[in-house]
Image (tube, helix red, strand yellow):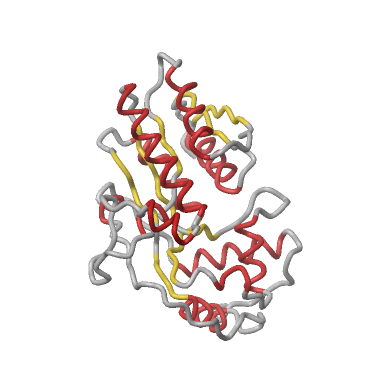
Length: 269
C-alpha cells in the first residue's frame, strides 16, 4: 500500500460493480475518495450533468469517463484482419437499425462528453472496458455478475447474444482508470480488454478448467463478424493485463465466498 496522500477524487455511481472496485483501488493508492450515488438518467444527459458539475470546480485536474468497448465494434464495414483500435466508432445508423440500444446510448454519451469537454477545455480521458470478470464487492450481484453466475450454472440465455466478446479482469479496469488519471501523457480513448473470445471458446475453456461445473457445452451459432482489439495504446503506458485464468479464478472464489456457488476446484489446483 502506498501511504503517500495523492489528493481528492470523486467517483460517481459509487455503489456499482466497477465503481466499488475502483474506490477500493483508489483508497489503497492513497487517494481521498468522495463517492456519489448515480441517479438513473438517460445516458447522455446523465453524463453531461456530471461534466457540468466538473466544470464548476476550479481545481479540476482531469476527468476519466467509463465508456465501453462496444463503442468501437458495432460496425459492418471493418476489416476482420485488422484489430479495432480507439480511432473506430460504432455506427449510429447500424445501432438504430439493429436496435442495439445499449451500444447506441454508450456511443452517443461518449461523443457528447468529448464535444462538451472540447468546448469547455476540460481534460478528458475515456476508458473503454470489455466485459468485466472478477470479484464482486457489493453483496447483491449486479446484472453482469449475475450473468456470469448463470453461465457457470449452465444457463445460456444471457450469454447467447454475446457471440464474440472481449473480456477483462475488473481489477485491470480499475487500475487502468487510475493509470490514465495519473499519467500526464495519457490522452484520448483507451480500450481495456485482455482477450476476445467466441462463446464456444469461452465455454471450452471454462469446462476444461472447472470440470465440476455444469457449464453449457454449446451455443447456437450467430453470424457475427470476427474481430480483435488493438490494446497497444494502453500497453504503451506500461500496462499489463491479468490472464483469463486469473479473471475466472477470482470470480469463482468471490461467488463461493458469497454463497452463490459451492466450492469449486480448478484443473490447475
